[in-house]
Amino acid sequence: MQIQATKAWDPEAFSFAVVSCSQEETEALGRAIGSLLEPGDVVTLSGELGGGKTCLVRGIVSSVAPDSAALVSSPTFALLHEYPGQPAVLHYDCYRLHGIDDAFEAGLEDQLQGNAVYLIEWPDKISEIIKNERLELLFEYDGETSRRISFLPHGPRAIAQVKKLSSWCFAPSF
Image (cartoon, rainbow, N blue to C red):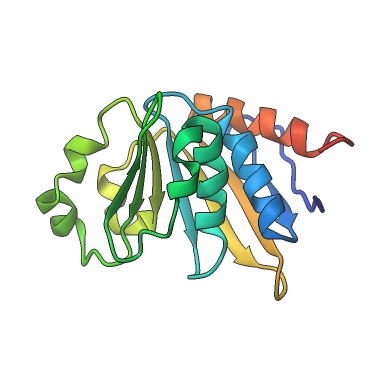
């Protein structure tokens, strides 16, 4: 995996980015993220359509709920895809929501309080009900087939996850 990084070791601002040059690399990154997730963890995924979010989700699901990995698809026309596992993975796509009222009507506030792993695309649509403690991922085009994925932690648990991920991503064997 090609690495482009900004590393700030200040626990309040720690972040880094990687450039993934293929779907396989993005899935591998997802598997690494998934290996660090526990029940109740929230990961938000922001970026343009076709930016690689679902590919990364496939990697996360293959790590957290391996029997469900083949089921992963973009939930663009559904608000939620649930992938059974221990813990379950709930993959939300909030693109079609018109605002927070739609989220309340769909019961998202209650759903986000359980013990699943929560993956939320287009989180800006429901930011009022997302936990403050979360791992935020930003996907940006970095060429025709490559994506820059930035890791922005919010809270001590997410900071620890990002530190662990950065040590793996910057290791020669990753």
